[in-house]
Length: 108
Image 1 (cartoon, rainbow, N blue to C red):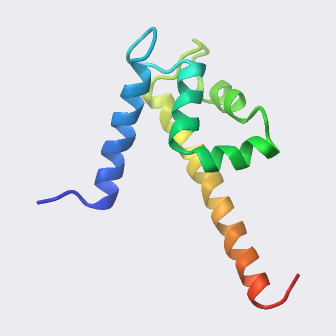
Image 2 (tube, rainbow, N blue to C red; image 1 turned 90 degrees about the vertical axis):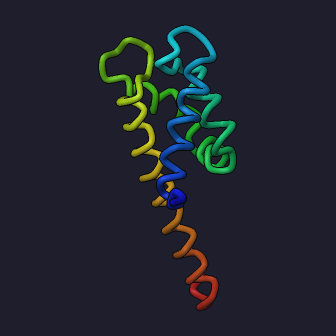
C-alpha cells in the first residue's frame, strides 16, 4: 500500500529536519543557522514574502520555539515552528482567496 499525500508529507518533514540537524553540532537539534537554512531552502517564496514584511521572523520564531532556552531546537520544539508556519501559511491562503474574490467582483 502506498503512502497517502499527508503520510508522505510527514515523512518528508521528518527527513528534512534530520538532514538540517546533522549539519553542525548536535545531530538531533537545529541551531538558528540550521533552522534558517531549512526554511529558506524549503519554503523560499513563503519566507521571502514574510521577510519583506517581518525581517526578524526566523530569529523570533526560533526564540519562541526554544522552550528550554538552550539555543537549539529539538524535534518537539520544531513542531511548534511547524505549527506557527502552517498557521501563517493558512492566513496567507485566506488573504489570497479574499483578494481573488474581491478582484473577481470588482471590490477594489
